[in-house]
Image (cartoon, rainbow, N blue to C red; front, side):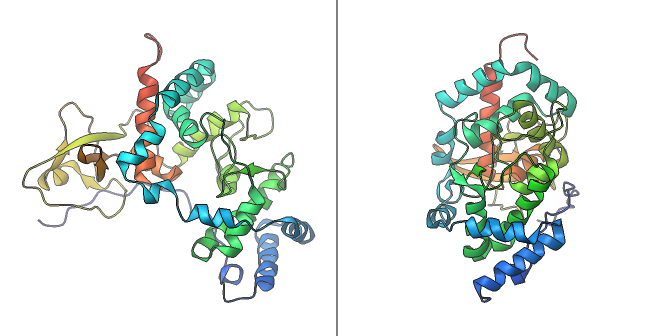
Length: 334
């Protein structure tokens, strides 16, 4: 069939800076790369060079961090095995209890931002089991290891390491040597990377600080703000279960951006099932489910969830957990 007239891509905030080759090229001796990093952090974020050297001298390489990076669940599990990790009775009931305990704050943020409270709760549920598992790696160790010993993503992680020093300047109450997080350097209940913390973290209760580690008003406001900054549409649908025509050819879209008109997808043999929501543009998702191939249409708000984690399985798990949490909301609740 002819190529479709694609819809515009979802507008995105500027890309977060990555470190230059002088910091990340493995052909350059490590000592030189570290000195180049010190210069980069000082020039880009006005970090004190002596302080940067002092922190890096205390950072420790962790082989288990590299090992974990090489086997993320999103990369090695099909949907039929990935979904049950998050769609458990314990996680659903935990989300309903968490929502009930924090309803006023969550509903206020939802009203202000247009991001439904159950999606904020689901992010926290998927990321940290409602704050129970936030990571035991020192953030500086994780970022140091990945910046200098994980070449394929070193530019990103060296950029995040520099952002950690910038964050420490912006939030002096944070001891960057003491911060704990995931093997990738994500922190707190919502697992924000240093750049996300610094750029999109919010002071949810106007106390003059942004504490995304344990302070719930800031956590809720920051997760919702992350969605808004990346293009969340108030009241918009997230996904629709799709049906495939018997004569439809396989179709693999070019990315997750919802640029395909529904009419084009229907012409290809993929359309929303009866009763499912519709939106102006979508992308097609093909998942290996328990009963065989599943087809979904991901709309703009689905794409926004993938900006939190680029895996479509992650985004679909967040959506389904959010729906299960909302389904348990008492009658009459918003």
